[in-house]
Amino acid sequence: MKTPYLHSVDNVVFGYNKRQLYVLVTQYLRGPLQGQHALPGDWLHPTETLEQAAERILKERTGLESATLKQYYTFSALNRHPSERAIGTAFWMITHCDKCSELKNNHDVCTQWYSLDKVPTLIFDHTKILNLARRALKSTVSSHPMGRDILPVKFTIGELIDLYETLLDIELDAPNFRRKLQRNNLLTATQEKARSPQGRLSTVYTFNSQAYETLAATGLPMAFSA
Image (cartoon, rainbow, N blue to C red; front, side, top):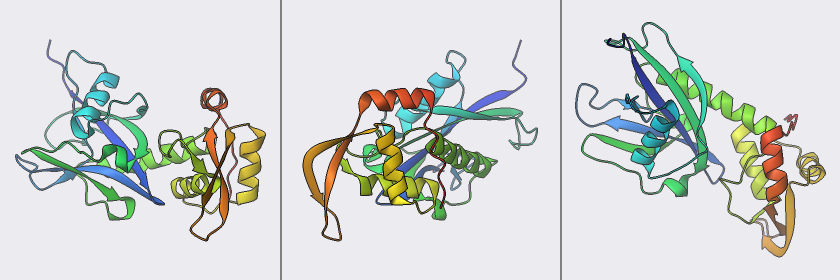
């Protein structure tokens, strides 16, 4: 019996670089959607799970093989596709832009980074998909440790604060943020120092892997406020 609907899988891939948040957007170069922009996605194949489809799309468009994709919503509005009954499941992830420096482009599509304030008009309900992914990202940052897949292995507190402020779009109370990290034993100080843009020497840290894994599983409510 033929399935009465199609099922799409769309990935929202956020990228961080120098206090800016970006998202990967695909432009169609041929076919009925030529010239239009969309989030990286494809139809679910009969022989794959939703997770396998999301990982396939990620690898095809970015070359990344990642287990950090998070499923966050299923879209089923009757009119979400103009010519087909289509249900869509969306995943999101975040990485550093440099890890996707070799984007996979071909004669059919071109994929590139756009800052969130310069995303072109997206097809169908992809703007809604992106907005809900942004909400999911903020919720995750507020309740779980963040940074291991984004920052270098060694970093300063200032660099970590820059990341959190960018992802949450707020200004943090730096001393309070530092105390929360120390209270949860999330960071390990190294013997190294790094000079800030203002010329001050700052301690260089790494993440405490055991604490990070535990808090990633149990949650780390940070109760952020501007």
